[in-house]
Length: 92
Image 1: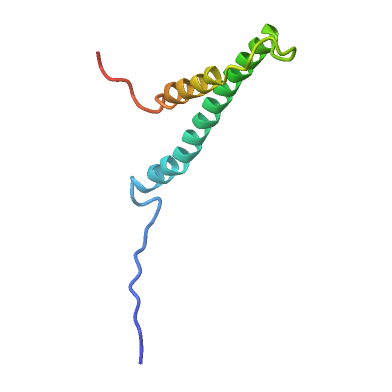
Image 2: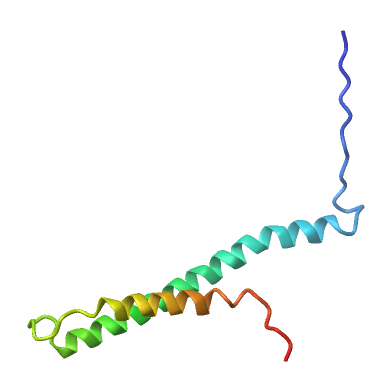
């Protein structure tokens, strides 16, 4: 009993769309993960600045209670603002 398998031959140099498609397809995950890491870094710096501000107000001495809502608000706004970047802007 013999089994035949038909294979599809794809020549990268023969078809005009294969090589650019492979390059773009390989770069897209790196671009989006890089944008995500930049967004996380920016939002983390904003939270650090808020915590430093709270320390200056007297958080360690106990004269001021921690403002958790401010940190949550910063992270929420930053995540929404930074993740819009990959989307193209709407025409005016």
